[in-house]
Amino acid sequence: MSRICQITGKKAMGGNTVSHSKRRVKRTFSINLFKRNFYWPEEDRWIRLNVSAAGLRLINKNGLSACLKKATAEGLIKNV
Image 1 (cartoon, rainbow, N blue to C red):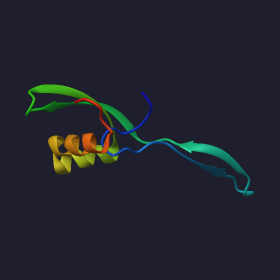
Image 2: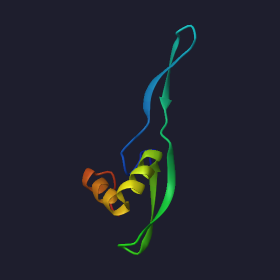
Image 3: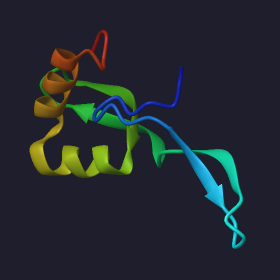
């Protein structure tokens, strides 16, 4: 599975490393991604998600069920 947040849809982006002499070299900016287990009380089971730090804050703010519903509507999660 690629390194994409299953809640926010964030993924790595490209850019340049710029030295002091302004030389530019291509690089990738990775996201802060974690594999976390979440307990889903409505289904009475545990689910494992690849979630970024921003996705964790979103789950804490809105709740797991609301975030999963939105992520499946956007096509980020196939089958939960």
